Image 1: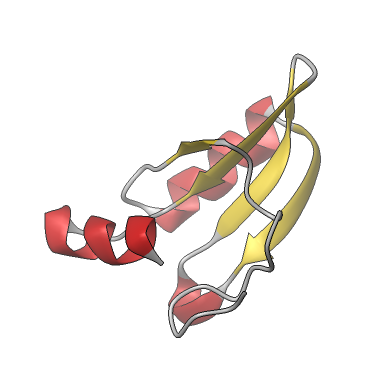
Image 2: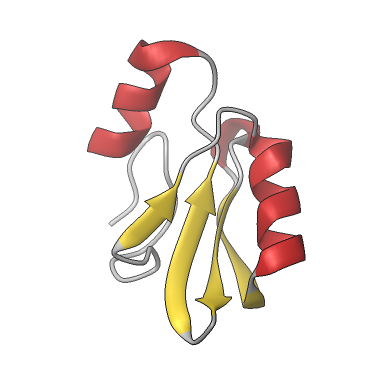
Length: 76
């Protein structure tokens, strides 16, 4: 279900989500380490990706700067 901060659908994110602050770092991690990568979020430039790592579904998404921003994305 999309929110004002995330346009992903239910099931787009894996149970394990890596959350670096910088969305471009999230993109780099996804492109470098994950296979079968697909973009699951791009609202306000906050990129999120899901793919597989050694056969396990993993997501990676930036959260911006600071704990308040991180809280918005983890609760959305």
